[in-house]
Length: 185
Image 1: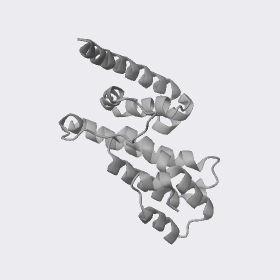
Image 2: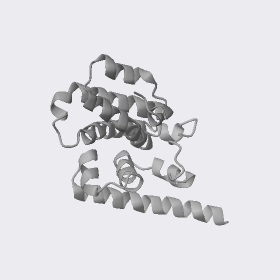
Image 3: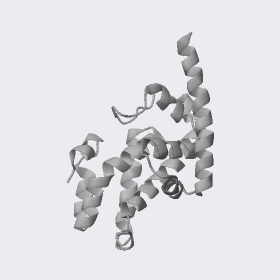
């Protein structure tokens, strides 16, 4: 049940066992196996904490299982579970951001190891963005998703998505320019 990508994220047979115990059909099991790691990576990029990302992703799949009779008839049930997970990640990120825990964090937040992923300066800059801006940046640049899909996933209009991306890019440009200037001196 757990493929290498899923188990490398720290998800053991517990969630896979839950899926088996409730008697999920083969289509659900396949969707779970094929999508869990990718959804967890996206959520991790948004919340910045692996354990929280895995918990949010598991919760999204549990919700999917509860709605499976309806969602299984959708053209893309994978987008339903991704949307649920991303919105939960945004809520979690917003709570963390509002409490100021991001700045007071003792240990730096690690991202999923990805050789093609962003470098440390970009990661640090993206982590300072507001939750919705961060989600839009992650989905647009790291997942290469079209803005119409991003808007649907984060719960805004397409024009609001472009506005969030524009504002985020301006902030990132300013932050990254400062870091480059500091490195040059």
